[in-house]
Length: 451
Image (cartoon, rainbow, N blue to C red; front, side):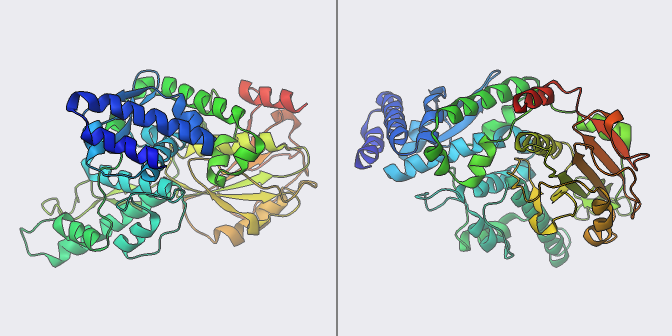
């Protein structure tokens, strides 16, 4: 590690003309070190296109029409005074952003100044909880907890932290607006900056997020295809032992089969059920219609589904690859609807003790069943699990083979997603909407591999 620290010092002692060359050399030596000590990160970094520039942040991901490139900024690196361990930690940090699709997922949010800072904190906390040897200013879930003064769980998806930060900011704005006299500031402003500095959570520009907003939607498919190939090639070169040393969340992101042509969930939901209102929620981006002159008061928007309960059939005819594919499809759903998705495994009973929340990156489902299938068990469990809450949607992922009749227990929308043709579905007059995956080419490819 001392040689990597010396590489960084060499950038500082070089002339402005030499700094770009020294930065490239420091990067190459770091990649060689990671190839020997942490092959996953080393092999991903060795495949990236690296450029140098004069950005404010030492390193960051920038979009092109075909890929994401890593930009190094020698002048910014000089001002950080990193050690070699911190240098490699920040390179790992950048790779995890890419693995979990943060640049593309939050490209639109980064264009809104009010959300850009929250995106930065949420994504950095999601990544840094899995890293060590970080610079002192790095944001983690623990620092978010100190800032907000409320419990923050460790190692959650960035979407969890982003929602929590938005709710906290809205609460802070409301409290500040009531406490200040007329004509005073309506934003968080100096109060939040002062509190975050006291808590030691004031972030510095350790890696760049600003360029994410340049990720136009027209080339998103090309970049995503490149990203998938990048991590697929890397995963194929890792041994079982090397994969075993990776955190579970990283392994889960490498494992699921991602559909080349994902199901159009938006059209499916509009076709089957339409928009299901679930009350109203405050929105600071809307005027308050009753008091439009008071800018500190939020308006309202109609909230749609707030909770989706997914029941995964774990009968013997459902393979692990098939279940991973279905969960991958559901993870894509979260890019369309900002809903809370809870996954429950079931066979002849619903195993609520094994439930988990699905984030935008699919988790690995540990099989707990494997026997027969009883759909009535799902409907019998709904009153206990949903407890009469509004804004509910139920999805049942199944091969379709079970009893002939089921008795609904709650008036909630139900979608059956079948891995078999609809005419082979055992339930007669099934409540809700029935959709088959048999016309999906990617699904058929998975089925052929399992035969």
